[in-house]
Length: 459
Image (cartoon, rainbow, N blue to C red; front, side, top):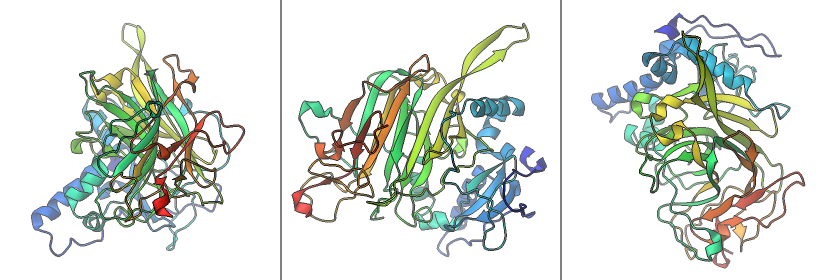
């Protein structure tokens, strides 16, 4: 395998000299005692499809207790898939270089990151060698804690599409089905992606349902509805899961994509053979997918995540000296607390085939997917979940106590940012969404607050 021939060099950090482990990480956890041999084999095949322990160049333990493996770039599932489809490694790397070169230039300071270079409790540097990609290690014990392989796959490879929305100007209220309420701003326009800054919160979930979660995110999508084409999306933001299902409890950075109306797709890359859209990570990024993010404190310090998703064209020249641009990637960028944006990597345009997202998006949406046990405003118990700070009380919101999105805009076909003209939608009831509360800063161009409904019966 190409990844096993890689000899790493060291990333530069302004810290003590880096010490990297020479041995490859191996999952030390034994199979659960009640697991059959066939189940054990299936779990191991699933783990190996993401990366093999022979392709790990260094490992360390994060401050929150996650084991992190640094995997050779050439061994990444998305890279292997592109090479198998006929791409060269130079072409894959050139696309990454183009994405890095196009990184938005705004921001200053350090991102909330795992790869700080400090030593863990046994002296291993919390950083990855050059040419490797950090992964939160997936173990048999973690899969067992989620309820087995089928349950774990439902968590990381399935995402629920939004319920049919309502425009609040209609004056009606629609109770949603299922355990989630959605609220979002929507741009129904030809576009090539978009951007938004959202508060990071830490909602507490009951943990009874496999995959229960609350999310703040952006959606870039095309198709679906009455178009006769599959709904295809690129999504990114932060997700909070019940503690213990996938590791230490914290909001975590995520990406997601589906090529076929959520029949397949998965979080944070993964193996195309498992239904994941081909994802190529940037080995130079210092923000890590699935890494915990520092959450805001109600009434105290507020922390933010900025996400940008943008379609990219690649110049291709033929042997005849004829050169042309073609759509090559959906680039994803992220930053925290106003720091310089990090290029996380790209979804390969080829993964969407002849589908609608291959040529651009028709909607850009910004909002929240809020856990709610049944969506009725009269439910006395158990308490419904907010976005981790405060819910809207009788439609009121306040900066520092209520989750929000701000400064959101979409890229026009000419790649100009357009932040005007969005339409507000929601499921459940109108109290989940507020656009009239004051901005947290005079520099905000647009914004909305969101969270669960809090009625008089909850006092």
